[in-house]
Length: 221
Image 1: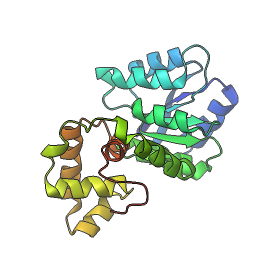
Image 2: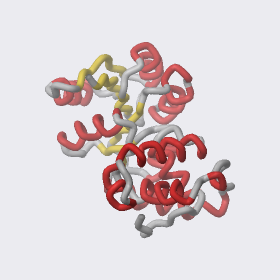
Image 3: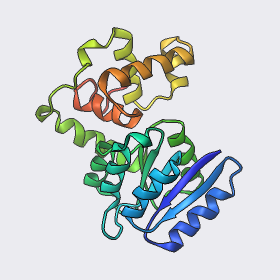
Image 4: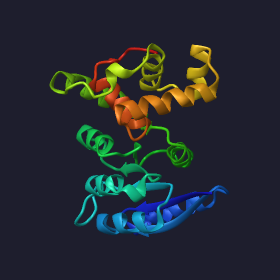
């Protein structure tokens, strides 16, 4: 069962998300928060698998709430997906750098929202297609001002191949087929790359790859 916390200052939005998610056999909404402060408190109290976090909330905003949740060692298994009406590049970049596992806009189709919860719970990165290309271009443009991450030189040739594939948006199954590896071997490589680069999840791994100049927008794995 995937346990979800809803954080949004609008009761109508929370109610709609709850009705949609509770209708799924493998998803359960365990708590709701109307403020960023409550979102942090409830996330650390319930330790859900996924937090659907609004950006603009009274007091503590969703971006800072995300950072506080992710920074707490008790929340190692909590994955935050930022969901907002505002499709702004700075929100996306801040959300991912703050530790969010994904970013969705509120006009996302219901089926895609459900999929986002499952993808985030599995530890994969998820971004709305409409913002992904702009985010990666923005990150790549800033690489000249960012020092290469520690651990980059420690990657093996195969691990670099896997990093490029992850940054290209490929799933473990797709990477396995493209590199002629088993899926379990790919998972091992991804875990090792994340450990060496200090990435919390695949979302941060993608950003790290672009910041380090390992890949550029338009490249394919």
